[in-house]
Length: 435
Image (cartoon, rainbow, N blue to C red):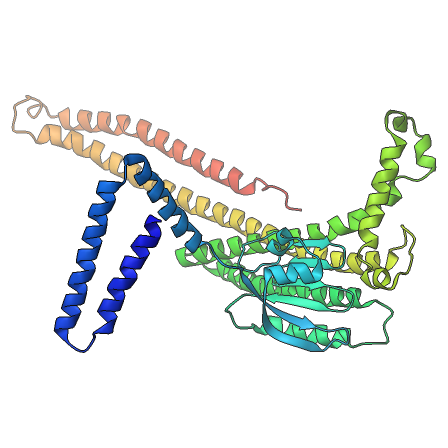
């Protein structure tokens, strides 16, 4: 009730303020009336409400404010291809609730393909009437007679997405192939993913190879910074490629798990400790997951054997091998970078040892000159030692000085020779083996 009274007072004040916009005096009177009404309402509320009612009113106002700030049903931008492979809708806007109701999905399924939610883990999920694919730049919903591509809301289509859409449209229109509609769509998606990985791998490898060639000629600070940047980029790419490979292997593992337990395997003693019922159930679930991906046969009511999914396995295995080659190439490039870093560290250590040896040589020379100057300084003082009267004193002191100086000089030269030997042994020591 208090909220309604407050709202009516504000509306009356606004009507007074808006109804007479012709003169400045009318606006001033409207503002004064609005301020007076607010003061009167606040005075009435303070005099009428108790402490408990005041807290309840504040809670009601806060609840209404939070309800007003709740987001509405989010929109997703989608491109739809029909059963003939033609583009039915380009960047159409749909609500999440409509998509869930139309395609029999759960709201949590759309979190995997919503481009506004950061999700770095690629996934291939099977649902009752669709296959959800979220790999790199592609987020798609594949059905038996349609493909829905999800775009970033409010952004423009990139060149990579345009090329993928063209290839997908061309592949879905082919009638000569024996693959069903959903597998042709899945093939186009995986082709685009592998092409994107290969393109990025070639570009990164070219950058790294050029930098490593430059490091062979000259070593400076800027090149080290570039090498650090390329190493991080290469490591990030390798992680993404491994995640794609893991997603493909998880789907393949569902179909391969049935081959792990044949009938003759149950005679093994270890199966005496296991329940055969649980193993059969696991085999059945694995085959069911693979057979659910045959959406066309499911739609037409064609019965399939539980273990009959060779087409899907061959398709996924071919792309899994390609991704594996890309991962191996990336790991080889990382090994080359690490080997180059080790060689550069050896070169820098050698340069540092050369500087230390030079410093030691300078110290030895300075020590020799200082020792000779010490003896000369002792006899250069204006003090009487009565040695100047002796005619053999000069020869005696010179002989003693020449006899004392070689001992520390020879010891310093021995330390310098020892440093050279240690440096040579370190340079000849083999580094860690790189596979």
